[in-house]
Image (cartoon, helix red, strand yellow):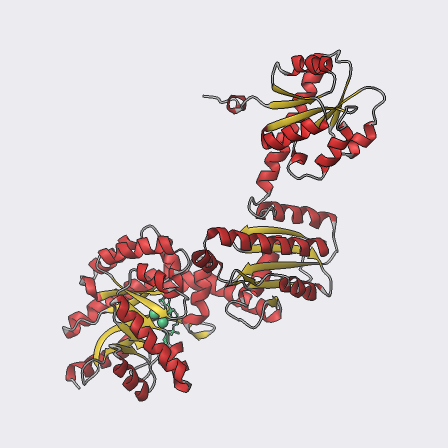
Length: 564
Ligand code: C2E
Ligand code: MG
Ligand code: MG
């Protein structure tokens, strides 16, 4: 079935403004064939109607010489009013009226009195209404509704055209990001989050005006700016940041800017923005700096990262990735008891040698490859758990790390169950570690999936607890079986009393939530003693063992069998 767009169109409204009744009626007769007509006798009445009806008016047909308020005065007021400016105006003229001035004041067309050609009038009215609606549609497609800034597609297209027109000119690309914006929303509500976005957008828009640039809002809290290259741009940017009302209603808002100065315009605009983004990302969690520049070192890192991404699939196929295991010990009794193992990936790269996960995991988390790698680790770890069980008659549950990205995979639960079943593991033999910061990103979705996993018998360990900024109320909603205290706290406790009290507090929180605590990064005997006294049941760290390959882990199992 073919739809005519006309079917969806309500009857449009046209406002006819003329002080002479006969003129109003004549024109009304013509226009009302296709439009609903409203009448006003002077500019003031027209203004009141426009304000009342606002967006529902499609056109104003305006006489110039009228008592109370002339057509020209109406046009001037309309020009300065953002809402009214959207309604197009056709001027109804006799020879004597000032056509040029009307055009300068924003009128779009003229119709001459007397009205001798009704079909010409209708054709003009239809054309103007259509043009104006098309313009509105384009505006809606180009613009982000909340901030009024352009959207990403328009921004890129504009720069592509600009590239052709301004060959040889120097430009800077910048990415501006609000730190922990999801938390601003979570803690202060969406309405407040919107206010923050609008404030930030207004500042960036001014910055764009000053630097001859264009700006867009790309995602929730991410803005792009592309402007003329000036040596003092960094100072201008810094100055603009200082204008931010940093303490909006007690919430501290922090904005990061990554700049790619004097861009290489031979690469695509998307890549120029990517480079600014690399600079911006380098500021994550660096609280003493707000601006970073894309430089030679970042470029080298980028090239290195590109290589890792290219090499990844082959590395899985040729088993360059090796899963290491780090034991966790239960220390409730006199003698520490090997209770489980954490699977931690390593990459023996043919060119770069031994690579720690810190080098490639964050990269793969950013581009989605982590799902493939995690799948590999889960299968390896589950198979290893079975091998130990069969060889030693001993159940050593393994914990695998589950990345935030994995939760967007609709097959996650199915995959994990399949892995557990294929290896004949009991429910309690495969644990899942989920980093605390993952919980704060898309809380609702994550809670749903994790609750479903828990129902399937997977034990959920909240990893890196204490650095993910969960509030207490958030914690109580989260499905957790175990809290893994981030090792940062043990480091802090080494040289100050407050650090020790922090750990005590974390353990109390876990008690409140009714879950046991695992302390990570335990390196010294004194720490073991302290944590035991505080009631921490399970410890993991170099004091017991570094992460080791499976063959070496066997020795720990052998030792365990020998007893204390
Ligand atoms: P994590 O899950 O919090 O793992 C604990 C990290 O602390 C490991 O670093 C471990 O080697 C290290 N560690 C353990 N005990 C000590 C200690 O006593 N002292 C010190 N200084 N460090 C200790 P690693 O293996 O470099 O892993 C870093 C992070 O990479 C992990 O943190 C985890 O977030 C991620 N990761 C590792 N393997 C995987 C994986 O297979 N999948 C995913 N998604 N992430 C992984
Ligand atoms: Mg972990
Ligand atoms: Mg951890």
